Image (cartoon, rainbow over all chains, first blue to last red; front, side, top):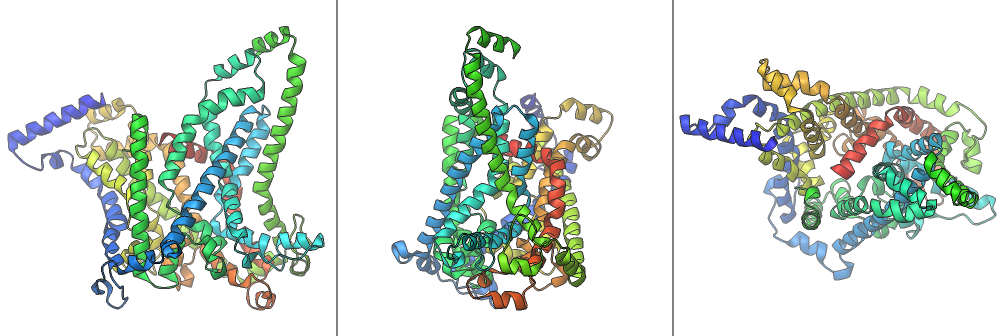
Amino acid sequence: MYQVSSDASKALNKKALKRGGKPFADFRAHKTYYFMLIPLFVYFIAFNYLPLFGLYNAFTNYDFSKGILSPFVGLQNFEFLFKGGSDSIIWRLTRNTILYNVAFIVLSNICQIGMAVLLKEITFKKFVKTSQTLMFMPYFVSMVIIGSIIYNLFNFNYGVFNNLFTSLGMEKFDFYRTPWVWPIIIVVVEIWKSLGYGTVIYLASIMGIDESIYEAAYVDGASKWQRIRYVTLPLLKPTVIILLLFAVGGILRGQFDLFWNIVGNNGLLLNATDIIDTYVYRSLTVNFSINLGTAAGLYQSLFGLILILTVNAIFRKFDKENSLF
Amino acid sequence: MNVSSVIVDKHGSKIRKDAGTKIFDIIAIIAVSIGALVCVIPFIIMLSGSFSTESEVVRSGYSIIPKGLTLEAYRVVLTSLGNTIGRAYMVTIYVTAVGTFLGLLCSSMGGYVLSRPDFKHRDKVSFFVYFTTLFSGGLIPTYLIVANVLHLNHSLWSVILGGLMSAFNVFLFRNFIKGIPDALMESARIDGAGDFRIYWQIIIPLTKPAMATIGLFTALGYWNNWFTYSLYLITDKDKWGLQYLLYRMLSRVTDAVKGSDVIIIQQLPSETMKLATAMLVTGPVLLFYPFVQRYFVSGLVVGSVKG
């Protein structure tokens, strides 16, 4: 149906071209469509295509007073970011970004799948609904609020944890001066925030499994553990693989909101918590180093593009239906 | 269900199985309950902190039950910061309403055109939109365009336009509209309706579920946005939205380490006041979301698995 009509319109267009030989025949026939696309074009050009020209600043020594006339310096910014091998800024940023994302992806998905599998087996529907709603709560609050929660849990003077330590007769712990605890806190917060919505996605996928398979397993005397092991998990595998691949495609994109609101510009913790996105934001708002920030951003975009294209190639090889374009 | 339980009965293994099932159910319920509680307890601590007296919090910290139940923090916040918070509320509501309305309009219009088989360049335009998800200039080039070329800094339009459209929303609309039977549009065309009229009178009413889902995601994004304010509206205090106002009130990290209690008590708003403000900022969302949760669920499922 779809194919036929598109062929038909192609034929019509050819005819129109032949008849009048006018290059704007399609525009004439569907003026309205073009007008309706104006907002879309204006928006994406202004906010997505025009900024591409700004990438030029990755190769300049940007000066606010000169703007685009700032001196061209070639690859100097990249040399600065890359120099020092394993001590280089870019290595630290890339390592942190990727390690955090790997931890997020693996641990969040394990927790989400676990919750979804358990919720499927619980027959008390009211309980399932209520707990799902409660787990969804963190998804709806802003990272500013979450940052304030973290502060109230961990601050030195009256944080919940230090309060607990004192009441147990232990020494207070200065979290905001101890870098090694923050990767753990950040990963836990991410798992916590994403638990609800990930569970929803996996539960929907599990609910899509043919109920007759479960009934057959029941008839064969499978216990609930066995149903999970031999029915739910194997049939959930395709969904898990798709979601993981998507996540790998975005592994270089950091969760800026999360890091900035929890750690902010705390110099003591930067080595353990600085990701590409926070570095770029600090370049713009704290250090005013437009050229270095742009260079780091360009590196992220290029590396990210390669990752997405790779993931897409994998998709196309195994599953034509699900390839991204 | 009945048939299968009878069969299990015949094998005589019902009792053993039921015991195993019971243990499983108990473990499952406990595990899920812990998960749900962990998600909620931080909010309860915040809520209880906002109802506690300042002196109790300073002396012995926060807990799940309010210490010295009082509305003092809310009273102080509403009297001393009432105007500021009221204005921030108006800003956030304005930005959310205008942004969501315009965003839905532009995205659905784009999605409609891209879904039409008689629009010749739909694949090219789709790629034009899709490309933005593959490669982008990133934060700083976008900032320079918005501030220096479009001159939107110091204007709320920077916030509204910044979150207006995304490739994702356009494609969600396109795919949703593709699912509407073509016969409806054909018959309207035969009755003399033009392309825009078909969109306005047929497509919009039929895309209500997609509108609700995408609209709620967009609105949540605007409501929780603090980031764009921090780029373009730092000095415009009367244009701060709720989240950014709170973000500025909390400016904390450097004050959070040992020996800084003097600074906190003397210069910054008190801890319970911060919590009361946080509750005022996020309260509407927390009260509202259980009623519209199903739209978010359908959006997440479509977006992640089928997108």
